Length: 212
Image (cartoon, rainbow, N blue to C red; front, side, top):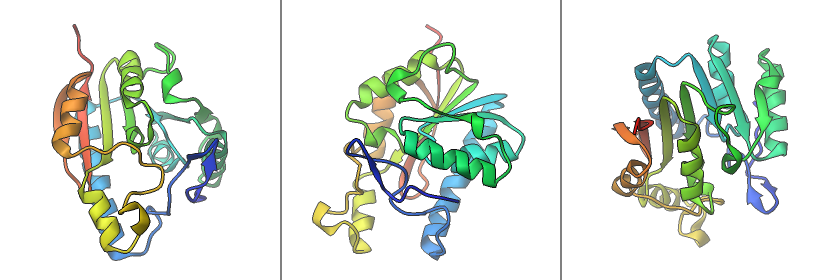
């Protein structure tokens, strides 16, 4: 799968800083399996018929779900990264047109709504996370799955492996930092939190749109 490799667009880091999905490092593979298992488990609770992945990056998850026959679409603010996602879709023989360019801030109901909205590894990149999650709230009619790096564990693990030392372990592009408790409290201002998972080193939340 083609990756953006932490490139920038309008001075914003796009895509993944490294190919964590294709890594052969056994520790990275173990961590990604934990993320996969948590995400799959939370998705199973929703019984969603239609899924919209916000901040889809190079399309890894949207493509996997399309290959499973699910009704999925993905969007990202970066035209460059959406082009890579479309190329990856073609390589995997799924429809490239399922990807589109759209910022989280520009989401509109009902066009961008779905039974399940997935927004993983996005909010930590936002200059205005409150506006981002409010936009998700505005389109959510059912379930929402969110994930962010769990701090300070994320930075500590990066530092321990000798990465981003001058940034004290902070991954390029991460400008928001939440502990598990802080993130759950943040999400609870906008959604009803149903379940919280902690696949190392992330916080992942299944929540639901409020009915009143």
